[in-house]
Amino acid sequence: MEKRDELYAGKAKSVYRTDDPQRLILHFRDDTSAFDGKKKESLARKGMVNNKFNAFIMEKLQAAGIPTHFETLLSDDECVVKNLEMLPVECVVRNVAAGGLVRRLGVEEGQALTPPTFELFLKDDANGDPMINESLAETFGWATPEQLATMKALTFQVNDVLKQLFLDGDMLLVDYKLEFGLFDGQVTLGDEFSPDGCRLWDANTREKMDKDRFRQGLGGVIEAYEEVGRRIGITF
Ligand code: C5P
Image 1 (cartoon, rainbow, N blue to C red):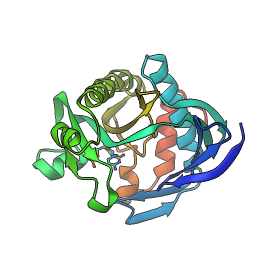
Image 2: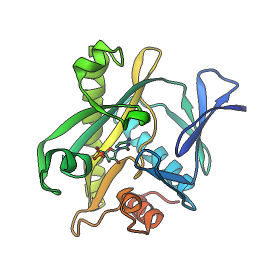
Image 3: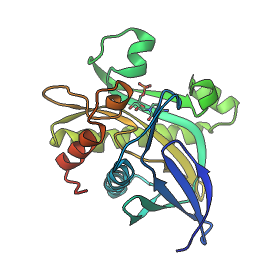
């Protein structure tokens, strides 16, 4: 497989075309950003850690029957993925109240959410990724009702797999964001799963082990990501 020109540069990853129109290369960079790109920093080892973390999780999900775009690791900070036609919505599941939910509803941080909640956001940095719903997504053509139902079902299936995986490492999967796209018309998990896009707390101390360490200036960001990985059996 031959790496070609850059197709797109996101805030933390760059996407390259290959000689196969059905395949792309994702390059995980060390760049970290929060608050819609207002806070930015480069963190050594982050690209490598998130690339290996993502590969491990995507393979677990694939093995559990969830279709993902992940194909293979290419280098320390690159992997090969299927070229999806991305749907411009973000799917968020929450097991414990934190972050945006606490800010929006004024509920207590740390409260267990039973059953877990499901939220949709529009991928639109300029408007701060506003919260949307199924009706708006259908009307504006962001996703069909069938695609929305599949994304919701897959997002909850991911919860069943990953909640247990992290609990086995003494961590709580507080919440996470997934993005999907279409490959041959099939709704397929895309983007990445790493501590950049989820919240993970130590199950005993409730210490934050995810990107909130960066958002809140707590330090030890990559050390925490590596500790999460180590606890679930990843070697970096
Ligand atoms: O900010 P909020 O609490 O709504 O985020 C919910 C979850 O989705 C968190 O795990 C956060 O890291 C993730 N998220 C993300 N990218 C966004 C928005 C949220 O990865 N643009």
